[in-house]
Image 1: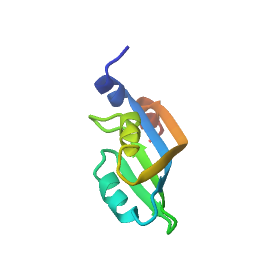
Image 2 (image 1 turned 90 degrees about the vertical axis):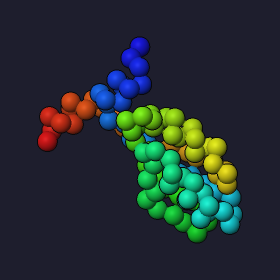
Image 3 (image 1 turned 135 degrees about the vertical axis):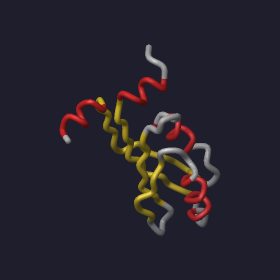
Image 4 (image 1 turned 45 degrees about the horizontal axis):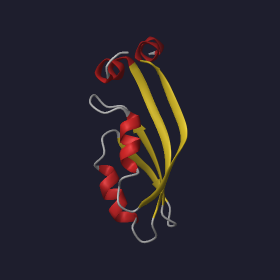
Amino acid sequence: MPDAQSFLADEFNICGVLVQTKPGGLDDVIGALSALPGLEIHERAGDGQLVVTIEDTATDPASETLSRVFGVDGVLNASLVYHHCEPIEDILSEA
């Protein structure tokens, strides 16, 4: 099995995630999530929901970053709603 570093160099991997936070804790969660590698916040709702994407980085697979989301204080749930993975060579050949 290839190590994580070689996998990350060969694949494009992105996850769409819906994050539900505790009431009143949205700003704190946003701050903590923003520090996670490969995570980008796209939308926030007043009811404590966030729409985020997580991509592989040079050092962190998206799956590990998604696991860290569950450990952020104030996160009630994180649901994977979209996942796409394909070889980098396929993406580069389309350009």
